[in-house]
Image (cartoon, rainbow, N blue to C red; front, side, top):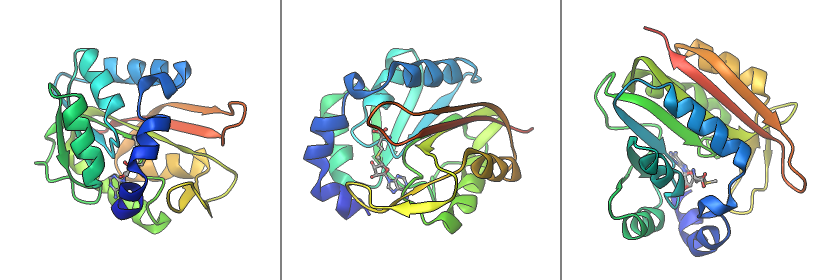
Length: 196
Ligand SMILES: C[S@@+](CC[C@H](N)C(=O)[O-])C[C@H]1O[C@@H](n2cnc3c(N)ncnc32)[C@H](O)[C@@H]1O
């Protein structure tokens, strides 16, 4: 997986690695979520080129970008030297229990095998403090279904199914989004709060 992104990292960065490539509706959704978080560190899990991490930093948040693709971590560190980035993956966040105020996983859990997602949500619940927040961005569809993403296999997720899994992991869902932009695959997002 990191190898697949590594091979196409320059192309990904050129096409999508800047906030100018993001939708205003997504910036509103992510920004509104971030403002509800308790004071503390946010992890941007699967941060890719680091543009969302830097954007959160610019909003005044303390944020660390984590990604398993070394090319993305190197790019992010070089482009945003004032922001923290490190190598890591969602399955093992290498953070103490209740150690962060929030986790943004924006289009980064889409490549996990579906049966790995509950475990990753439990790992997120472990590291998010009670009252902290989780925000997922993903491709949505009527069923869990694999498709040939430009880089490597990804999955569509029904919002309801993912919402149930998020609840089962110890969160209460506070907001959701579903949208189809012209020429794009259907977008879904779920914001949730860690139950104390
Ligand atoms: C579609 S990109 C999204 C990147 C960024 N969040 C964005 O919105 O542009 C998917 C990212 O997930 C990362 N990724 C893949 N498997 C991962 C895993 N198990 N844990 C964390 N990140 C992962 C990839 O390296 C890649 O940077």
